[in-house]
Amino acid sequence: MRAAEVAAGREEYENVLRDAERFAPFAEDLIWAEALLYVPDNAYRHLTGDEWDRGTRHSYESRSHQAGWTGP
Image (cartoon, rainbow, N blue to C red):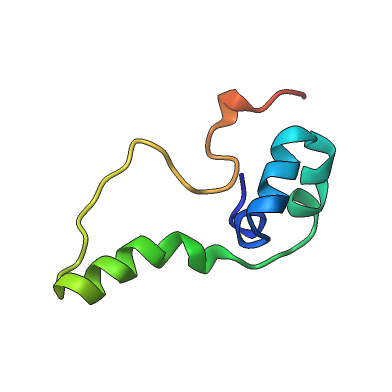
């Protein structure tokens, strides 16, 4: 999933889950929605006044899970 797809709303998100062809515009076009990745960190800082020192086992960087991609 891409942040832009999530920003497009629940209906579009669910459409993409049902039909992979609908993912193409989110993969090919430059749709800037990276700011969504920082919403949890900003909300935590706003509510607590502290930085959220969180680690994650999954990277949110594009194509970071190379084993999950098929093809040449």
